[in-house]
Amino acid sequence: MCGRFVFAFSKDELENLSRTNVWINEEKFHTSYNVAPSAWVPVVRTCAYEQRQKDENEKLKVKEESEEQEVESTNSLFDMRRVLHVMKWGLEPFWSRKKSNEVKHCINARSETLLEKNMFKVPLKAGGRGVLIANGFYEWQKLPGEKGKVPYFISDEAGPLYLAVVYDLFEDESHKEGQFTIVTVDANPSLAWLHDRMPAILKPQQLEEWLNTKKFSAEEAVAILKPFEGKLKTQMASPLVNSVKNDGEELISFKRTREDSKHYSIDSFFSLNSRNKFPKSTK
Image 1 (tube, one colour):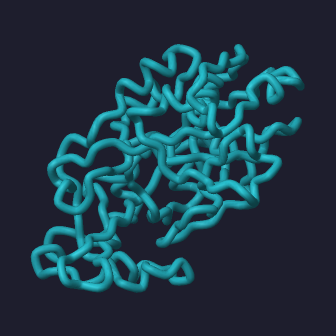
Image 2 (cartoon, helix red, strand yellow):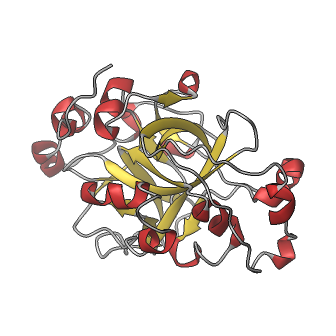
């Protein structure tokens, strides 16, 4: 699963990585070394303003107990330009938003059931595929005989992580407000000792296939979601990360070994040098 992550990119860095300088909800942008559910985070998506009928919600409303029934999605018109849309982390079922205080937000979605559960299937069929660009994420290990759990920070020394998300937009004229959930897959061998699930990490060359909802169907896109190939960097994080009130770079630079200090630098990881693989977008 993925319950916390690090997002420490500046606006310029994020525009460079996403290849766009077009924003929606830019005023809600902020960075954090301890992003928790319900936070507002930039998601890369295509500029898809759905031409939905006003009564679409009525047709798609289903009771929670009948969630598995088939629901037809509406055809949408898409403008395939990329945008950075600041959305809320946590997806609630589209049929229960009028009573959101009674519903839990889903922060993770299993890739295996994306096309089975209407909660994910409906937004997917409408084109709700996005990418969350993160510096890394946290996971906790339960040790035998210990009361608490040990937090770890997971990252890729080669650069940022591109996490697949499913998003949905609220029913308003501007389509500015949105929610998203992070897709998870089985953990790869380098993380299986820590947890049996991990975020679905996309390779840079897979971004087009995941984001281009006009060219690639939901079925084709979901098929590329596999455990990350390769070994991720895992290092012990500070116990301070357990509280969402704490923030700062010190959360991920806790108790580094001499070997880590020699071959890995937090400062260099968050520098532009590790993220200049794409041409800088111009304003």
